[in-house]
Amino acid sequence: METTTDERNSTQELKRKNGGLRTMPFIIANETFEKVAGVGLQANMILYLQNEYNLSSATGATILFLWLAISYFTPIFGAFVSDSYLEEYCNVRRAGNDSAMANSHYSKRKASTL
Image (cartoon, rainbow, N blue to C red):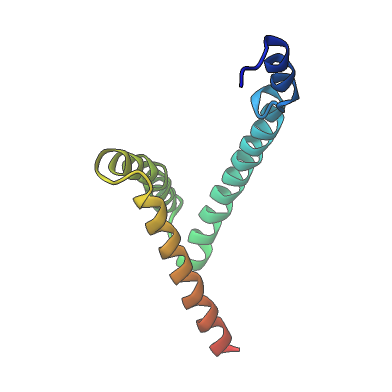
């Protein structure tokens, strides 16, 4: 069964456009809130390390720097390993299993401590 050009154009017009510029405000807002939260976390973490662990400002800043460096580097390393050496969906499956096991472990642990 052949379709005419008019039928193809009408079916293409009915398809809804996803993404594009409509999603940009959400992405920008998400990034903005993430940066604001990160700055607030850094300030609070320095104060926490100074008051609770009695560390100097320099030592606290060094610990925070190393923590942030590791936090930003590990996803890059994980993406490289996943793309280079693992199957297409193997990593997603493993992460889902790990998440399910962790959730079940912590929910049992939380219930037993109540």
